[in-house]
Amino acid sequence: MRRIKIIEEKIFVFLSAFMTYSLILVLLFIIGVIFVKGFNALNPDMVLKTPRGGYYYGGEGGVLNAIAGSLYIAIGATLIAIFIGLPAALYINVQLIRHRKTQNTIRYFLDALWGIPSIVYGAFGFTLMLFFGMNASLLAGIITVALLISPIMVRTFDEVLSTIPRGLHEASLALGSTRTETAFKVIFRQGFPGFITAVLLSFGRGIGDAASVLFTAGYTDNVPVNLDEPAATLPLAIFFQLGSPIPEVRERAFASAVILTFIILLLSFAARYLAKKYSRTNLR
Amino acid sequence: MFNPDTILAEKDQNIQSAAVSHEAKALRVNNLNVYAGDHHILRDISLEIPANRITVLLGPSGCGKTTLLKCMNKLTDLYKELKVSGNIFIGTDDILNTTHNIPAIRQKMGLLSQRPYPLPVSIYKNVAYGLKIKGIRDKKLIDFSVEKHLREVGLWEEVKNRLNAPATSLSIGQQQRLCLARGLAVKPAIILADEPTSALDPISSKIIEHLFREMKRHYTIVLVTHVLRQAIRLADHVIFMCDGRIVEQGSPSDLFSQPESDELRAYLIDGN
Image 1: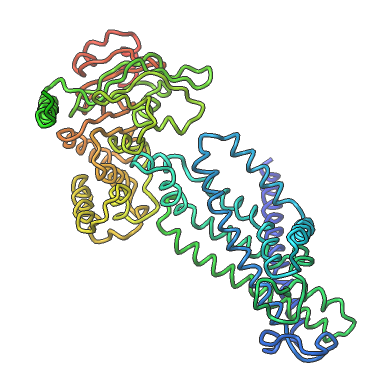
Image 2 (image 1 turned 30 degrees about the horizontal axis):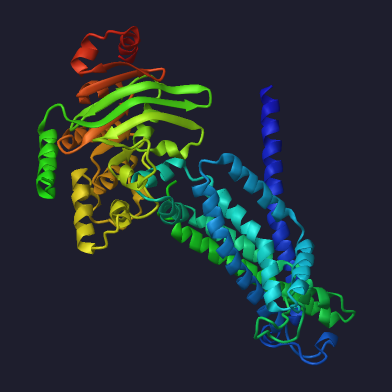
């Protein structure tokens, strides 16, 4: 009996460790593959120049248009999503604290929104765009991506806020704070690491999504200057270049993937650092 | 005829004589009933809390002590399932049946909960919080008040060199005293303490008990506890509850030496 337990324990520990580390291996593998495949095309021109004539046939230039477009869209959309998501998450957790049923209904709808595929958001954004008589543009892309990532922002932040003990609410109210003061001065503060995570997740989803910007942001070889100009994005840049029959262009697709992954990793580190820095005062 | 000055003077006199009088009441609960769905949590509670005394709410777990405390600073508002009826008077104001300026009502009561909940900010800002939401911006006044209240709870010497450290870096006992200081800074008249020592080590508990004895000169204290010895050490007035009812109330010497009800007798025997 005892022997069996020991063997069972060993097998299970091995299995769970194996699963955990294989996931991390997958990450390293992905980074390795895109790095190796795109290595030859990785040069300063890729980041500093926009496509010149004949770029898509192996000519000179880079993907600055897509880097700029992606950053503009992801930053713009994340800002809008913060503007929507922050008050919404605080509302659910502070104002609605007495109304558990309403809270759960709202969470159900937000989860449904989260689950809608991004191509549907793309189609919706496209319809909206036509309705307002707009062209494929930076603005249309930002709005569509903002719609896509807002539920992610709200739910991720909300998930952290919902774990804050009721005693902290009560302590704040007992000191004579209004609900709004409790929300912004106490609950937001306590949930700040969760807020950072929410921003990061939303940004990552926004900058990496191709389907939602396909119809709405369009594609261009220029860096957009105005909100009504079309904007290129990195996922679409990868998509177009990867479909090329010319090996040099396919290499550039991988180089673009390296750039996109690098941006996301950089952000992820920054977010971890910030979350740690600001959770020093948190109640544990 | 009508002279506002004399009326104000009279009112002042009343307040003064009330404070001096032995029988002064800080709080009066009248016919309080609380339901959670079909469950009758508090039944016909009527009681008076004497001013500048420690009133101990005693009783077995789940008898409604905490709910009664939460009614007193309207934290029952946070629970939709609780239906509350009756009156709670401070002076002549019924604080239970009003929606007017609830933060001001809550500021009259300091709350000390079972485990400390320091705000997720520095030690200094924890004590300054109440003042800042009252709209006080004068840095000197806030500094003064922070020091005064940290001294009041005997924490000043321990933290004066690290006021900007996170409140959570303190030990649990220190955190509980910080929460007390934070509550005192908003100048409450009544301290509601809900088993404030249950999460603390014996030494920290002793400190809190000592503070309560000192503080009753300036504050009225309502203490929920189910530590019988603590009740005996601290109580000036005892309210014994069981199953949501008040079984007995009176002076500790009467209650503890000559319990009238079987419930209290049983509780005293088991509690020792």
